[in-house]
Length: 243
Image (cartoon, rainbow, N blue to C red; front, side, top):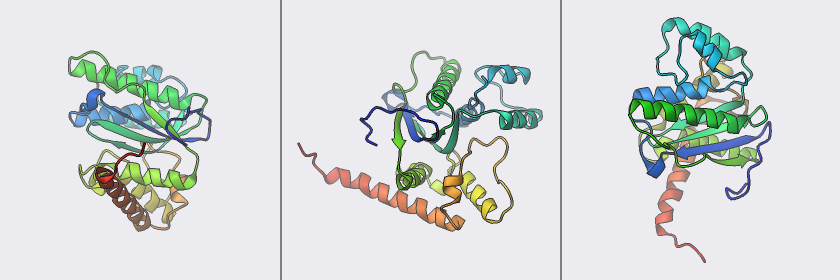
């Protein structure tokens, strides 16, 4: 679907969600910021609003306090019991932007999830760095992925995004889903059950698990997407737009 077409969110549909800092400014200044956004992706993805349970654990609305070891089992069990708004199939957090591949499960799930995450992270960021105003460049950008081939390509693109931009090695980058997907695929192929922890952001990986017969196949696929994406990026420098 074209980015210029109006998006109608539907349950069961896959969507690419993206946003970046206003004026392309950095939105993750240190490791704590990455963890905060990661926690938002995990903790705000439930139909039953999250504040009541987090309050029981003594965690403030904007999640300023890091989780203690005693919290993990209780919070993990709670998260597993919740009805999710979306499935987060892949993610990548760059210095000034983020990419998500989402599958909507509940009516208005994508919109509500993205609003919660953006609002919570902005409140945290503004309080921590003593600033005010908007953090992100408008409402998040989104596109409906209505073709399985494009969906798989997008998954490769998101997991390889940091390397596409020349900011590091995709396989080593801690703030994308690349390493977790490899772990889950390895466990799936060995029939060892899920390799994801109860506190994982990811779910709904069937589309990936059914397509790759080995971890190496997935790695090679991501490498191919990285190579193609970088080539297209470089080619733009030599192309003129047609009228």
